[in-house]
Length: 203
Image (tube, rainbow, N blue to C red; front, side, top):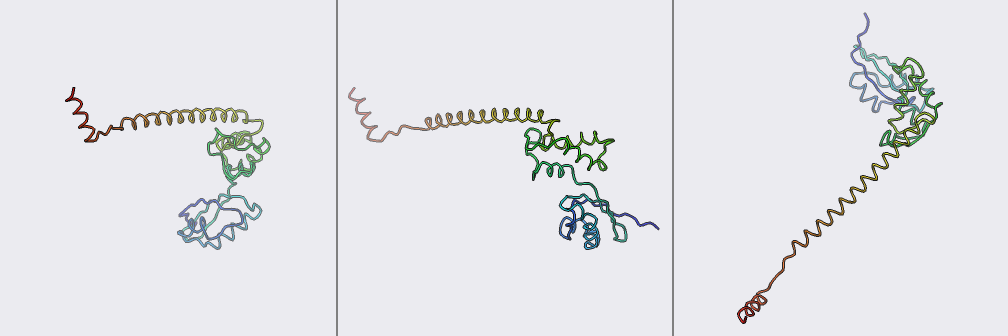
């Protein structure tokens, strides 16, 4: 009788460096998986990819045994690696933070082809290019001119916002000055009031 899969768990682990600490321990521990056995098998299977982040889909069976399938590294990870970035641009396509060439794009697409819903390498390149665009990574000779134009537009928009903020601050400052003046009340002492009354009587 075939064993029944009771749980499928997706993890992302650095190749050759799986330990019983999170995410392995927190992901597999509650399901009774032998963590030491998993780590040994995973590290052995990924030792030739040391340093890369490897997605892994683990199938846990009803007897607590397991099997796993390795996937290719995430496109975002491969793009950051090619562009020598630690993270993508905070403003996405509106801010170019790095540029890679078409050969880098093709190499990443070839790596990801088996895991992408793509029918050929050109289609895979288009998918990866879209990911790069959202990370602020331009592809030399492909979309760098377009991204540079978007960056210029974003810079203009930021300058306009800064100008509006400055104008608003000036208006607020003027309003405060007027308010302060309005709060100035002339204080008349009792003696001064008596003198005023005496003058009125004399007249």
